[in-house]
Image 1 (spheres, one colour):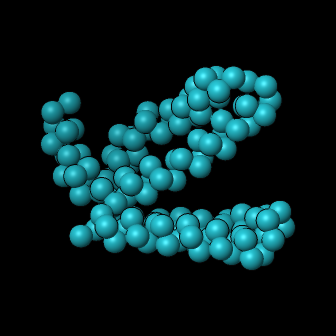
Image 2 (cartoon, rainbow, N blue to C red):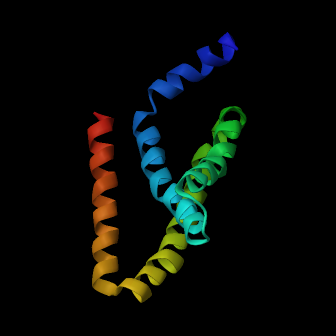
Amino acid sequence: MPALLTTCLPVILSGESMAVAIGVHNIPEGLAVASVAVSHGQSVLTAMAVATAAAFPQAIMAVPAYLFVDFFSQILPIGLGFAAGAMMWLVLSEMVTEASESLGKKTAATTVLLGFLAMTTFEAIFSS
């Protein structure tokens, strides 16, 4: 275990902005899971437990994922580029389209812009 901490600690300490981005991302994800549970008649406490349980695999897979990425570090930029492209496609083709249909184009565009500005602000704060 100490060897693992020695290996992971510099990465953990240098990844503050990524940790904040993941944490901020997990808020709407948890709210989405919890709101479905509440809308199906579950208590708020049960909804909170369901949202927490839904995020539990992330904690379990954190160390194996780190070891996998460390092993394949030479091709990591290719994988990150592919993941970024896939996320952009998903956001643009599915999420923004659905938001525009249900909220209207102006509200959806404003929300997307505010989210982008918030994440850019977090990056600027935590990267310095």
